[in-house]
Amino acid sequence: MPFSFLVRPRPDQVRAARLDADTADRVVAVMRESNARLEERVRQLQSRVAQLERENQSLRTRADADSQAHLLKSRFLQHAETELRASFEAVVGFARLLWEEASLGQRPMLGSLLSGSQRMGKVIDQMAAVSPLDAVGLAFEEVEAADLVGGASRAVAMELARQGVALEAAAPTPVKVRADAAWIRHALTVFVLRAIDRGSSVAMSAIPKGSLVRFDVADRGPDIDAAALDMLLVEPEMARCRRVIELHGGALEVTSGPGLGCTIAFALPAVTST
Image (cartoon, rainbow, N blue to C red; front, side, top):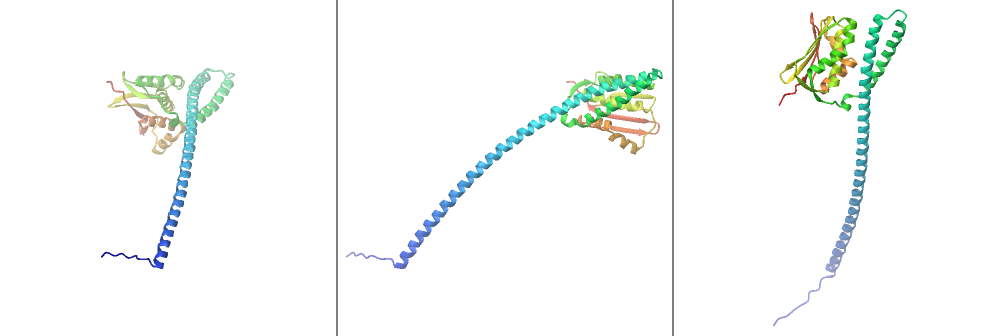
């Protein structure tokens, strides 16, 4: 015959079960509270991240505007410096020619003109110092090597006549290079003017050598020792020309030896016909 019986838990078991239930409830409550705090913290962090993104975007916008303003300023200074230097060199060259033919009464006026030109030259050099080439950039184009040599030859014509120095210029045609024509002509002009001051004859040439065109400016003046060559390369105008050539991917070479005078050389990429 089936039977049944009822097992009653002991009082201590009931209390333990109640404690377990209360503990579980507290744990769940703590977890919910912690999760709520965590979610609130996540929302705060997301808000902060969004704020930082907006601030970062604002900074980038201001930085872009500052960079553009700096670029425009540098380009303006570069253009002004180039135009002023061209005019300055023409005025100084003409004044020197007049000095040779001027009477004693006219020379004081020409002396004032030359003195003022020297001050203007310093101002132009200061403008060049605050218009870095790296910020401005170069305007590359395909240009005939002969046009670069010819442009530099014309720029120094008055100084050649004044000092009685002969210039032999040679460049094959058609040979083109990729370069900023204005800056390379300026560099060649600087090199030739330096050579004119050193000797009675100067040679300037552009010679194709494989994928490059080598430009040389040589004089027949006294040789220069190694220390003087190093000093030459850090002079402001020479250093600027050196930087121009480096931005073209080339390197400026200055060599000298007994009976050989001084040669300033650099190479530019030749434009290959397709």
